[in-house]
Length: 325
Image 1 (cartoon, rainbow, N blue to C red):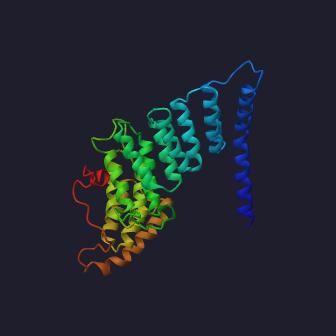
Image 2: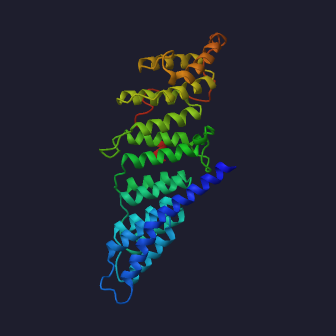
Image 3: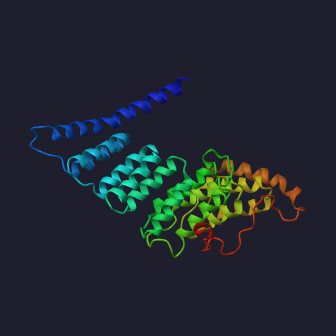
């Protein structure tokens, strides 16, 4: 329809605008390299031009500039490779990212730093390659580097998205190798963030908890989602009402109305008024549906129809077998 055409036109306009600075940078670089120029480009000039290609969504142009840099007798720096990896990240170019890693080590004998790894992990997320994102995080830590909270969150998000949570599908699928479900791997990354192995300045933040609660609720793991809500509160963060809503609905879908009602009591403790807060309307409607089922469920032992084990004490502390396995 017209809306789709308008969206495409707007995207094309945005891309054209992003390429204006790139085109200017490339023209300036060409003038500096031309015969008779009194000013020759140095590695800083090339780094800026490569970054302009990254923002112009032109990884091919960025790699071409790496070749010209070498032709001019210059040696790339780790900043050069960080900008080159950013060019790959912007468009989710996995093959380009692998090419950057090979060039860093084989051609220049350098080690990738946190910026290069962070951009590569984001590239994997954009390409839907959650396993590669997790592998890179493992390698990063194994090489003695210190990923920051944003890098950890990118891996958690990649794994959550691999479960289909972005569309609310809640597939909870394992990877193609038949190993642990992606939501378990996302939890394992969280456990590393809260363990003694995490860098000193790394800790879960609101984004971490938002991703995990949404992922676990969608994948019918309400007890674990509730554990994340509790951990969030213990860290001094007040969960948004929609996180409670999703967890209540997950309990409802699992046939666990009593647990859902208990969670709704916790919501009151966080100041969410069932009757007075319009933001809570949807959660309240879910609660009404749950209440209507309580009478039918009281005689049923267990009150838990999901394929979910009750989380044991200390489940979120240590126990990194998924991480290290």
